[in-house]
Length: 256
Picture: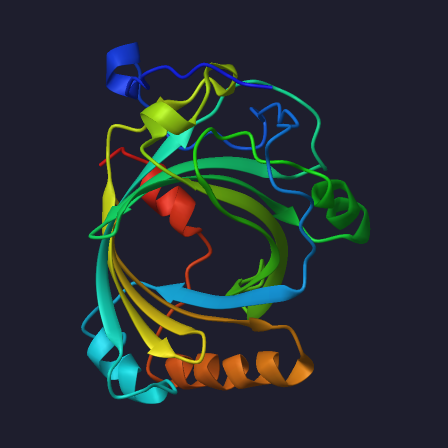
């Protein structure tokens, strides 16, 4: 099955503005005969993010806390999110995310589904195939564990299930017409330090301001979560206030 491609207008060209389209406007995923097969969740990404300030830690403060090699790499990225607008059936509470990301290595597009973790949702997502058009780099099914305040203000790990596929190329060529992709009128930039052993430190500049994120990608285990918890505890002692909003929401709400 092959879809034709269309140029993707911005929301300004459509005559409206808005934040990222949530799970109320989900996207029909078509099985692409040439796509890669099902993915299975075996990996996890732990993450915590906060706003730097005079009281909260900066990237310079955080770097010594992380296990890292001497020759860590630094890369700059620019990100634009897309609203996607055709309804379908996904597990309850799941959001659909469209993203274009560019760096010195080129431009890539990502289609992502993210929501509450459950065995039923994991089984449903295992059978998805990538709806994007282009050279396919990766299909990934993993758990996202994010430390954020709960309704009582306690900073606790919150678990989500995430399925994504990424292909080479700009969104105007990789998101086919049935996805009804509309590019947000704003972008975000970030610097990423790959500090070794799956640890990353990112400094984001979003429409909502500066954000720092520490993340750790690894095969899940009780000891790996405990290792990340130690970093979170150190950040809390340094007056970091973890954010409840995701990077997607922070970067796709273009209202100043």
